[in-house]
Each structure stands twice: as C-alpha cells, then as structure tokens.
Image 1 (cartoon, rainbow, N blue to C red):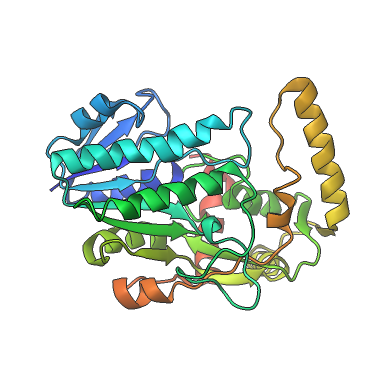
Image 2: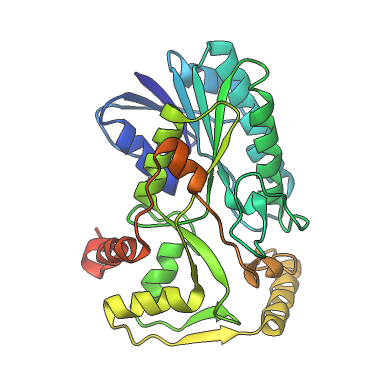
Amino acid sequence: MKIFITGATGYVGHQLALTLANNNLVHILVRNLNSPNLPWHKNIRTFAGDINDCSSIENAMQGCEQVYHTAALVKIFDKEPAAFYKINVDGTKNLLNVSLKLGVKKFVFTSTCGVLGTSVLHPKSENDPRISSFDNDYEFTKYLAENLVKDYVHKGLFTVIVALSKVYGPGIETHPISVNKVIHNFIQGKLTIIPKPGKLETNYCFIDDVVQGHILAMAKGIGGEKYILGGENISYTALFGCIRSLTNTKARLIEVPKILVQFWALLQWMRFKITHKEPFVTGKGIRQIFCNKTFCSDKAVRQLGYRLTPLREGLQQTIQFLKPQNHAQ
C-alpha cells in the first residue's frame, strides 16, 4: 500500500514513516531535501514540496490510499503570528482538498491535547469542553484545524483525529525544550526548574505508543472521531523522583513560584522588543505552566486497542537512549 506522510522530519512523523515503511511504500513531503532529519528506508520516497503548495502535495500524494498529517508549526510564539494560520490551518485545508480530489481512503490528523486546555477535577477526555481561553496561536490554530478535519467527513473524506500530550522516548531531537532534552539535562546533573507547587500534574506519552496509536487510528478509528493518545499522569516532583531513582543523578530540582516566572516572561518580552529574539515563555503562556494538564486515553484503549507503556519502563528506555555514547550516535 502507498501511504502519504507530512512532518516526516519531525519527532513523531520521522518514527511513524520508518515504522510504516517496513510493510508499505511511504511517500513523504519535505521542504528541505538536505534535512539531517530525513528518514532513510528503501521503501520511503521523498518529494520536495510544501503543504501550502497544492501542486507539490498532489504530485507526492498520487496513488496513496492513506494520509497521515503530522506536520505543524509547533512553538509557543512566533514574531509572525500569521505563520501559525498559514501552516496549521491553511496547510491542513490544502491536504484535505487534495486528499478528497485524489480519492484518498483515510486521513489521520495529528493534533495536541493542548486544544482541550487545563484539567481541574479529573483528567480530560475527548469531549470535555475547554474551560479557558487559548493562550497561544499554536493551540488555537490546531483547534481550528480540528474543526476543518471534522467538517470534511461530511464532504466524503474519512478522517480521524489523534491528540498527543507530552511525547518522550528514543528518537530525533527537533525541539529546543523537548521532554527528552529536559530529561537529558537532569541526568547530566544540570539544575532543573519546575513550577511551584511540584505536585502539579502533566501527562506523558511514550513515542512508540504514539506511533502505534496513529496506525491503530487509521485501521480501527471511527470516521469523524478524536482519540487521545496519552500516557500516565504524574506530578513534576514524582516524575523527576522516578528519573533520579533510575540514574542516581545528583541534579538539583528547584520549584519556582509563579511571580518569578512572570518577571522572567516580562524580561523575555523586553528582550524580544529590542533584539527580536523570540521568548521562551510569554505572559499568556504562564497559565499553562502553573496548572494541571491531565488526560484520559480510555477511549483509544477501548476502541483502538491502544497500549500505554508504563512510565517507569518508558523512562528506562529513554535514559538508555540518552546516555552520551548512544545519544551522540
């Protein structure tokens, strides 16, 4: 079978392309043919193009029965906010239109649990309403894209949405503040900062589970439905406590109060105004740091057969991968 994938130079898309290529012919659309993150496999065909160029999409998608759209602009801030809308919304619409035109059988869209927002009394599931406004253009544009994907079911395209929490595990490094990078710094003995109180909880999903979850969503997902591909909910303190028990790292863990992060965000914004260097954290984004973001994957487990790797087991594999001699390779 021929399968089309966007975002194959990204963390999840790269692993997904390699996995699918074991039993399928995979077409990937990339902007840079010289990217060091290109997945290499005898069954992968690489096409130069862009999701905002319908002709290049159509050329790469010819003959493909399935589409996985994992590409996105993933960051908390961009000095050109319109870029989020161009890539995450318009790009998705282009892919949906071409898929419909070429008679693609199934379309899986990769979204984020961030669309659901913060959790209060219990872990959030797919149909729980968002209780707060959006804090960044990334999450808002993924929300808009989700609505587009759902609309195309009524136009005759079989679409399924998968929503990811914080992904970790062996794979390529594509983000400056990824979970893997935080884990790596901690096991290297570097000072690690977490929000105060450290009992705040977040959800972490293992990369292998996420890749298999995409494939299961394509095979078993119900058209128009959304599935959370998450992992365990755990507090910051417990997470780093687990890592410490697996590595015996002596790294210091410091809880930082909200007011200090607000001050840091202000300094970051002032620096941006002077140097145009994008901030690591924004005033709006602080709310996302000092909250619980827990999610429930029961629907995916029940309907897709999704499997959650125990966090400790996933961390063991990740730490082994991140050891200096392995990580350098």
